[in-house]
Image (cartoon, rainbow, N blue to C red):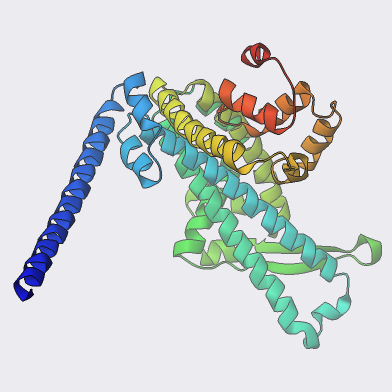
Length: 364
């Protein structure tokens, strides 16, 4: 009996060991297959346009794998530079907005003369620090924007770039803004001092650079110095950056449009691939949602505010309730990657209770 139990235990142990080894081999094999697929895709995306054979496998990649593969696409580098320029522009605009808001806050607070008394000295100091911080951020954002634009211009031929740059910017002011960033980062932290002018309803608040102190304490190049010396005794922060913002806004509205019109085929193909990847991911999620998670009792209209803006909701509710036109408009608003195919559209119609001939779905 003992020998029988011992033999059975040994057999079970051997079988368990064999099962574990089989599992390890299967996992290793799957890993090899996954690596083979990634290698195939990394090679495949290097030839544009990317073929349907490659794209059919590419759309099933997710997470970090997408970047690891798509960084081998010839359009990756330039697309990244264009995206970086767009992010730099967004950051610059946000920094400008933040500075103007701080100046507005100080303007409101300064209407109370007690702000400048000793008991509120710390509060006044906080306004000075906040303003200084926003100037630092905005000047840095402006310099980053110039640098990012240069990287794109090196790779995209844009006719009349220099002429449009000159017509939009005051070159001396432009140089001063760039040099201000360099000074704040590497030389000295120039103070912007507050000033109150006039009284009563004519009372105005200001943060200013002192012209003499800028020249004495700073390390500005010749062109920036020309701008400084051409100013009055002080340089008003609001006037300086509002003027510069208007120039930036005008120039980059033109530039971003020009870039999009002249994008290389590599970039367009890169974006096509990404769009297909996103579309497939969205399609799979909504197919799962409408097949398994949405039931007859689900009030889909009660969830629309999670996906649509108030203005979009107003437009949707103005259409006939549960009509094909209404649901088509909802799909159009939400489907940014053109993921909705005939099957998914039919599922959505059904979920919203729209009764429609299947032949009409294919025509939509």
